Length: 220
Image 1: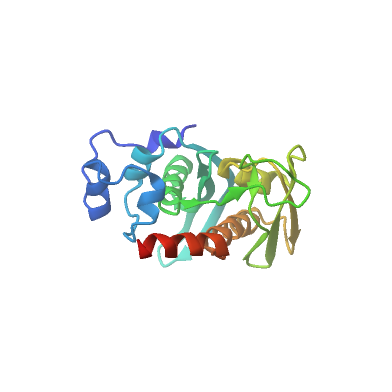
Image 2: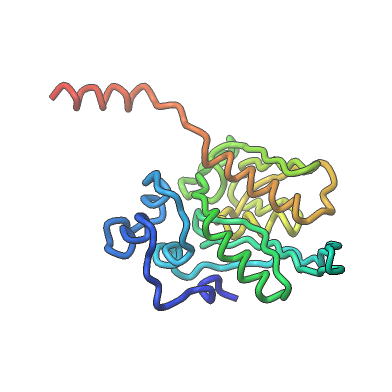
């Protein structure tokens, strides 16, 4: 399934960011994420990242007792990505499985992050962005996942759930460690996504050379 099946061809943006995207003022996902404006319309993600893929990682039936009786809903865990540095994760609930999946896809697009890819392993000499730039950790519930940069050719040393998230993010090589109740798919997937999100929020120290170059430009 393509995540763009969620699209509505007659999209009319209702947010400032959506209008900037439709008018062409913002034409990349990186610019949208760095704009400081909230991402509230999944359709604008379709505009900036055409051809998104999605994968349903888990479907569970959730029962809840109410005054009117027992209510049953389905909870779906979905990850979406372009396999080239962008990935999103979400859970969706609805009375029908199909509706829960579509709802999760829409929310996952709003949770889109840019993953800092590179060649962060000391064993690697590749200039191609095939892994992470540095190791990172993420936690959800009792589960903690660590993703470690690996040299080109290793592949993804990870469980099926963790591998699905990393592949949709565009990572090809990585070591992973996981702790806790890893049989709980929702926590394992969320911990993996949180690890990538933590990596995306990290700040790299500025090199001494680049600081000097910027100072020289400022003096001119």
